Length: 270
Image (cartoon, rainbow, N blue to C red; front, side, top):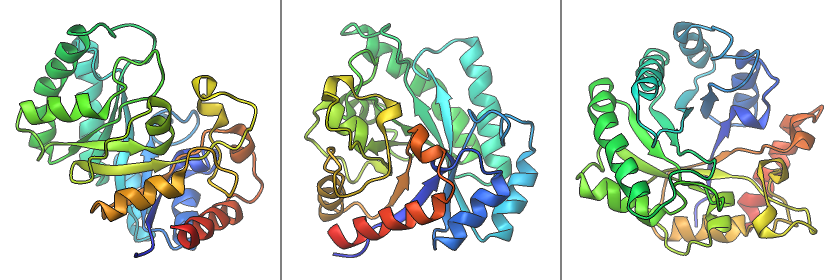
């Protein structure tokens, strides 16, 4: 089996300025990155222009896979439409290929019938906006019990009901896949995979949260290696993007060294 193709989400080293982040990716032999709009004091939220981001990516021969993310995308209203328009414009101007779409995760909008209609309404509204810009919408179900879109099966059904596979793809997040207890893979509809591990032996699956998400190593409880292998064996040939949220990762003095160790581990195990 070929070695997984890795990408780097800015959440892997959120304190690094965008130029240094791209430089670290290059040093790791990674040529694909995800930028974010939720990092205080960093691009995009600090007002860095998309042209500046595009120039930095060009200097490092780096492809911007996505902007992460339009939050609460399945709660469509005038505010969301404005946010979507702004992010899609930024994505196009900086050369990003896709926009990650994250559902609301506060316990609302979970009722059967309601959540499917909310999802459909948002996809219908987003499709012409994304198509006009040539940007892919990456739908990311979250595995948390309180999330309004936990299931990739449900997301895939909504995309197919609109015959919209050319516009929308799924994000397979190894953390959320494990939490949701999902078994079905959608390799042909998966546009990106987010990878992170949990090594805390004391936390229950139901209590796992973003601060538990570390770099994948031998004591990982999420079976990242099994998930990656299954996706690749099923035909997925895309990127596996590191997205750790744990403070212990963000505080590392040498994130490059830690990322390289995780890359080496996954490459040998998969």
